[in-house]
Image (cartoon, rainbow, N blue to C red):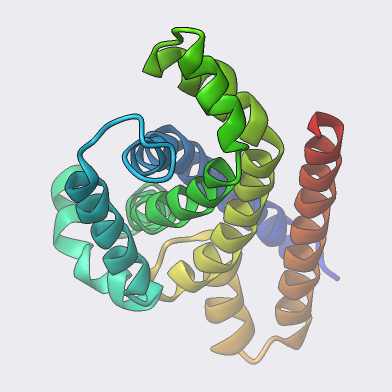
Length: 215
């Protein structure tokens, strides 16, 4: 394998990691509050406004129902308005984040919903506020599941970032399409697949390890 190909794969891997981890951070920052809101207005019954929780839940599911490749195209005007361009790594972070926020919110909501209701009722009986229940019961008890959800989200984002390469997002997907597929370079194609498999395996291993330690 030539030095040029190695440099291309290295630079594309860095671009993929930039897209994936920036999008994952945004999805956790915005997705976790959504999950807490859906849980607090739903199974935890901390707020008696179920219609709001149902509305948010419907919006979350509606966005998740849109295939990512279609979401990429639909968000081109919004991405161009926000970033100034619809091409490149920074531009790809916008659709990746919008796709990942509801995805992580739903995974986190499932973990939060599994927290023992007896603990919530016990804190309520001792005069605990809603904030205390969220901070000291829901989040700590669901933490292993929340970490596992982040891992699944990051792995999904790696696949989505490769798909984003189809519209010039940069990264490993872009490299595979431009140099591997369009130029019939099997070495680059197989190298990209190998790097993607290694990235997914490494992230899944780290996520499983952290989640197990927190259990």
